[in-house]
Every structure is written in structure tokens, then in C-alpha cells.
Image (cartoon, rainbow, N blue to C red; front, side):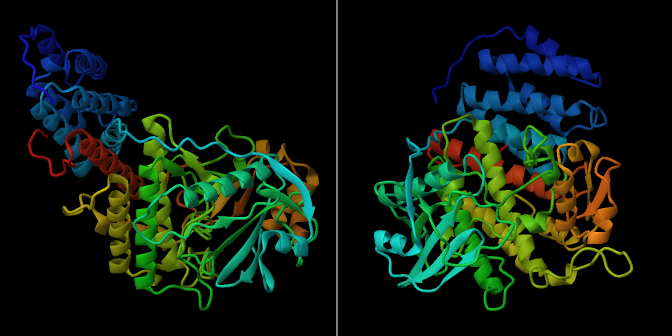
Length: 541
């Protein structure tokens, strides 16, 4: 970065700095004007301006303002713009140090604003030119015909979710069935295409990652299964035409890190190792511009999937209530063999905000699975007890083990994403997070959700009744309920937070935001100057 010197008139800067104070509108407009300087005349922003912006983020004058978030965001973005447009390395360092100290030393809205500003720094990540293959074969095959076409010698077949799984040599042969949704066959085609792409283009990964090998039938991945080799359970909502893909995978492809089943549960040591590898792989894929959009399915409110524009999906940076967190962790899309469910992979060529959100979602999903591992020691201890009190399962957690996994998730994801090991002391308080995770994830305080009248209006009577039965209502009680009479409160938790409120574990969101900011800002500095700037070197805040 070349150093430029230029004589500047500081009259305007002096005026803006004097305006920053207890008056909220005046402070906001002054910060907006300083951002204009950061973009067009960065040489004019002297250290005192950086110090003033840091003071806005760490001060308490505007904390009670309902719109304080916008002031904090504008201040943080001004510092980020100055970091990118700085006229000297020293100016860039000062801007970064100020933002990074806010991420480390504050909480709440200022911390979230500073983390977002760092998370939106421009990094040179661009995914592969991946052309989705959407051609679907009309070939309808029996099970025996499929095995012959695929040249697979398969043994007894069982059902795992919506996949038919049969032993085949040292691994398994999997037939994944399409759901009864318009885009489901195309999603299966995308999954097989990603398998082919990752398995055949010279990718290298730092740890075990067994990429399944898709089967091509007449030059196409998606075929129709004409008959089922076993009885398929109700409730899977499979596509009536039997669309499916086939692939071979390792024997432990369906082994989950938090599995509660006898003989399947991992020891604390093996769980930590599996989570460490998964974080490293997820970070490595993200660094290549290959983003997994659903490490686990996360929702703000599943009940409103059909009515809301966001389909009820969880946008973590909004810090809303997290719907059925333990249920979401049952079958994570990572495990002993590596990352899975490639239908959720996308090639990133978009805006930095998408990258920041996805990195945060990766970390959040893995942290939630970490908590679910301990609850899965006794999954029946859940909900309310016989006296109507929340079940207290905190004794299932090992705080030291959980803290260790939290550290591994951050450090290994960082290593995969940035491309170098994290060698400093952990910048985030893993001990506090582990303590708060045990407190909120170990006691089922929030079990209810509300089926509102507006959601009932979108149902038919038989759908309303089936909905109630699926959620534990008896036949008698379901028959008494009339659709459209009133809101219905249903016990479907545990949730993290009360219905239509904020998350009861805000610490996990702040940790995720700060961790994502660390990863992206380190990648930015490594691209810019060859190494990651970590420990802040000034006392500007």
C-alpha cells in the first residue's frame, strides 16, 4: 500500500467531529458525513476521527435509543470503508484495531455492528463455474434392473430417511428418492452433479472427505424407480413418479456425530474429532466459493413456512427465536465421512453479505449440534415433567468438553477458510458461551408455539386435524378443535426463546457474528498483505 500525503482543509472534519455527542440526529448525520470522507477523501480522516468513531461504538450515550443500531452500523461501516480505502498501512491498522476491539470488548448492538462491518470486507472468493444438470431421465427401472445398470452387487436393503440403503462391497449403495415437490427431481440432479464435480476436478481436502460416486443411467443421473425393494413408511411424501438418484458411499455415510442410538453414539473424544474435521471441511469449501446452505435446517417458525416470504427460515443476524433447535440437529449434513447432502451446495459469486451470513450459519449449525450431542445422551428427558416444570437436563453436559468443542469449531473453521492455522489465544469467550449454552439448552423453558388463525386459514379441515395429531393431540382432543375458532398453542419444543420473541441464547449469535468477522477479516488481510492481522496494536478504543 503506497503512502500518499496531501494537504487537506480540516474545517469540515472539525465541524463533523464537534457534532458527535449526546444529540442522536446530529451524531448520525455527522457519522454519515464521515463515511463520505472515508470513501472519497480518506486522507482527511486523522486518528482523532477514528477515535471518535470508536467512541460512538463503545459509548453509552445512545444505547437507549430505539434506532441506535443504525448509528452503530454507520460508525462501523465508516471504519470498514476507511480500512479498505486507507492511504497508509498505519491508517488501515488503526481502523481495523478500533473495529476489532469493539468485536472483542463490547456486547449487543455495537458488537453486532462491528462484526458485520468486518464480515463484509471484500475477499477474493469466487466459486466454480458450475452448470447445474437438470436433465431427468424418463427411464423407469425395477430394483433388479437398477442394480444391473449400475453394476452394483447389493445385499439387503433398508430405509434411512427417504434413502434406500443396501450393503455393497466395503460400502453402501444408496438410492435417494425425490420428495413430492416441484423442484425435488432437479435438486437430486444438482446433488449428483456436485458429487461428480467434487470427485473429478482435482480438489484436495485437508482431512477425510469421502465424496460419494453417483450412478449414471443412460447418461443421466435422475431415473425413476418402478418398484420399491421394501415397504416405505408413510409421511415421507415421496414423488408419485418415483424419481431418484443412486450413488455409492462409504459404510459410515449415515453415521451422525450426535447419534443417540445404541452402538452408534460417539465418545466425547471421537465427537470432538468429528466436529473438528467437519468444521475444517466446511471452512475449506467456503474458501473455494462452495457454500453449504443447510448444515442443519434452521427455522424461526416452521409453522409459517408457506405464508412468509422467507419461508420461516432462520436469519441468525436478526437474533430471533430459534424454532425446535434439538429437532433441527437430529440429522446434520456432516458426519464421520465428511460433508453430505450436496443438493444444498451453491457456487458463491455474489455479495459479501451472503458470504458473511453463510459463514455464520455454518458456525451456528455446528455449535447447536455440539449442544445436542450432550442432550442426546438421554433424548427422552425433554419438555415438562409430571408437575409441569421444565425438564432440567444440565447434568448431561460436560462443560469442559463442550468448551473444547466450541474452540475446535472456531479454530478449525478458521484454518479451512483462511488457509492458515489460528495460533493466537482464542479471541472469543468460549467458556462463557459453553456456560450459557448449558443453561439455555439444558433446561426446556420454551416449549410452545402458536398456530395462528391466519395460518389455519391456509389449511383444509383434514390438514388441520392431521397437523394436530402429528404434534401429539389425541384423536378426541383433535376432533373437538375447530379450524379458525382461535389461535392454538402447541407444545413442540424445545425452542430457544418464546414464540415471536428474541432468542433466549443471544450469546451464541454474538459469538457466531464475531467468529465470522474474524474469519473474513483474516482472509481479507491475508489477501492484502500476506498475513492475518490479529492482535490489535493500538489503544484507539
